[in-house]
Length: 245
Length: 250
Image 1 (spheres, each protein chain N blue to C red):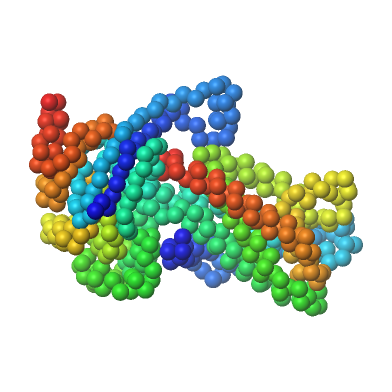
Image 2: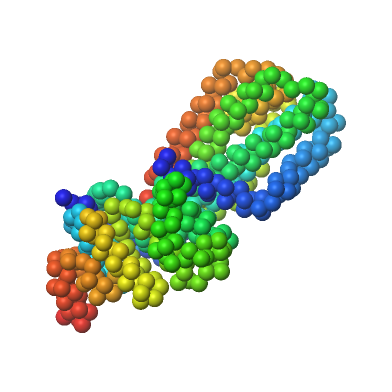
């Protein structure tokens, strides 16, 4: 059963030579008949499916369209053509700790972040202790977030995010969180989610993490899928691509 | 959107806290400006319009009703642009950002009108029963403002000088609404165009129910509901079209 079906999507960005973002500039532009922007295809005719309970890795060079693809899956960006279908509740980790307020306490921030992830207060009450246990921050729950170290903030955000209990995870390079022990804990949690039948799409430059988590991967280059299949093989293709073939 | 009611509540509270600098006195400071404005306008214009019935009270009610529109629409301009991380980093229905701004302004406006009630009572000597209709008018007005907010906030993402344009329009609209002067000074042949300004109708209805003790006509209620529905439909339509590129433009 497919959890994600991506059918022939393309995404075009407009890169204006001169950015017009006022009414005045637009009127001037209309009079002068200037519509000077370059079109840049960030994604071109991309189709694939991800099965339920599968972890798919996406690798590629900078600017290959990985993050654009993930953002389209996350419904932050919209594709210009083609369609995307996602099954169940989706949690996207394009960035951790969106909406965190430094002036509020860790406790209050967990509630705010959870509400952004679509949880209600009562639901948060139930997972509250698990979040702080996982983040190992129980002692600091009443401390203001501005006094947290960046590692602590990220741990809190990650712990909150994974306890929101989504069916599909979209993850963009957020494993660089905390020390080795915490990273291992996160990887274990991800493996556990996979075993529970949750779907994971994982964008990363950390090839060994991709290898450990995903059986199947996709190599993107200049907005197109180069290869898709067994992670081992895709990584070899990627390395070959990096060396200029 | 209902699934995100917790987020709507949180964003509204944060908005209000920021506005009143986390102090309960903050609200009373914010009352100073409309009351002073009313006082100044009263002393300047009482020679011209002072003979009108209830001039001072109508002025106060008009200013309070006007404030809801002008402050809420101006604040809604930044509703999307002011929260970039909630647009580019995570999926939420983006109407929530505009709705929470409008709700925060609704609450401020309600507080202002509540303060107005004892002042009305002192100046009039009584409160008309029709004041009970106030919530109904306020809800229609709120819906109209929310619709305008959807339109303005989504356009502002693409046109960043809209705030300056809107500031000018707002001050023109202030003088095109019967706040300082009575409706009776408008020449009859211009009346039709004058009444195209929705704020005029709303101000008239507030004065009907809060001061004069009249029931607003069914016709005028139907017209303002029409305005509110139109603003909401146009606002939602434009917003849903434009929001597709928000994450790129912000």
